[in-house]
Image (cartoon, rainbow, N blue to C red; front, side, top):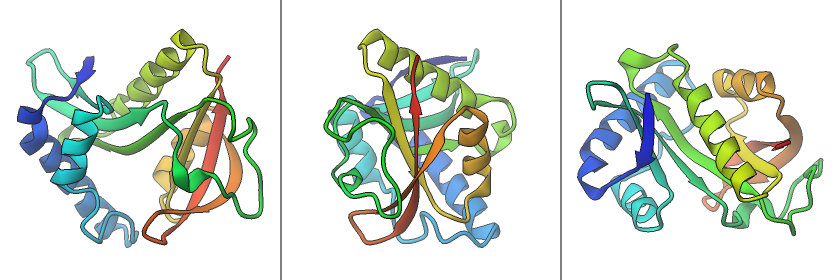
Length: 171
C-alpha cells in the first residue's frame, strides 16, 4: 500500500468509495453522510487545498481515501460537555472524509491512513490529531479508541449535525 495526494482525475474513484461508505452507513441505520455530504465539489476543494489523499494497492487501484489537514477546524472551537486535551489555540491535525473501498474493508487501510497522518504531524512537530464521528458510528469509534484517542466531548458540524469529538496526543 502506498499513499499520495489526490488528483482531480481521482475524483470518480474517490466518489465511488464514498458512495460505498454511504451505503454501508445507511445499511447500519447510521444517519451520517446521508444528506449529500461529502460530494464531488468538497473532494475537489480538498484536492485544490492539497488535503485529499488516496491509498493505492500494488496494482495502482485506489482502495481508500481521506481528507487530512493541519489547518484549524472552525467547528472545533466549541466543545460541549468536555474539552480538548491540547488547547484549540495550538496547532493540530484533522481527519475528515475517511472511507475504504468495500472490497478492501478489514485490510487495515484505515489504520494505515492514521499511521501516515500521525507521522506527518510528527514531521511537522505538531502534537495533536483531532477527529469527530457520528455517535452511532461504532466502527470508527472502536478504531480511534484502539489507537489511543481520548473522547473530548460533542461538537456540531457546520450544517448542525452532532458529532463525538476525539483527540490523540502524538508522541
